[in-house]
Length: 245
Image (cartoon, rainbow, N blue to C red; front, side, top):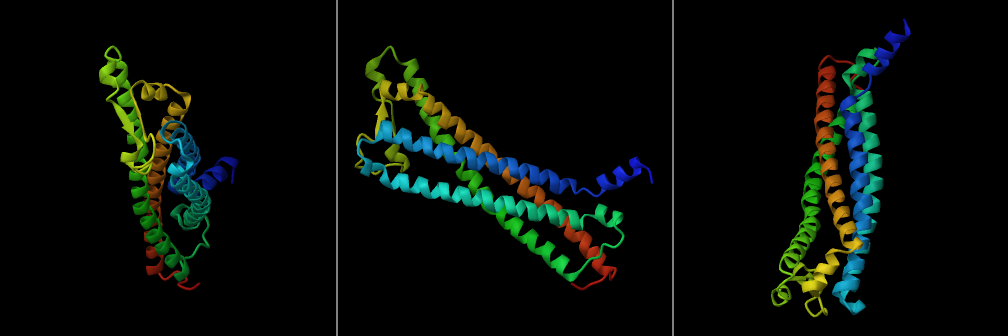
């Protein structure tokens, strides 16, 4: 066998759907976890600098942010390991591998593993759909703030009007109602929107939202690929190829 035929056989055994899904999942989780972690840190700084004078006013928010950051660490580790498992499952159940290595056999354990991965991946996809929707909330919040700042800049020639335009962090549940000042109005808000911290946090939330979308796409791709792999194993099982563990 020549080098070309050998390379073609090796390339034919690659589970391309699972490989693409793994790359998407790694990149999406990296964006979501990395940018989300930093965005939460920058959000705490903005709240501390512009919306709360007393630390007791945002101490609960600080604890919530800390807990979310710990969750982000766990998510990164879990998805890294789970994607490796799904990629390995794709390698050992793809029909291309079966055609390349003639000794491949379908077993009860293999079919149980594939069906379990389908169920787990489907549940993860549904849960991550909720995460994807929730990750849009801070983007919407910062977009509202930016829109208000744009309106203030347009009405800057009438100072009496711009002082009525405010962004109240208490309305979004970020701070308790007794927090002081709890809101930024007029040119104070406009100056806040011009800071590097604001644009950095806004961009980080957008990147985290995009990362959540990429991860959701990867999970949906995994659902399709694992379902196809399970169908292949069921087909092999009907042919009676070594139905044992």
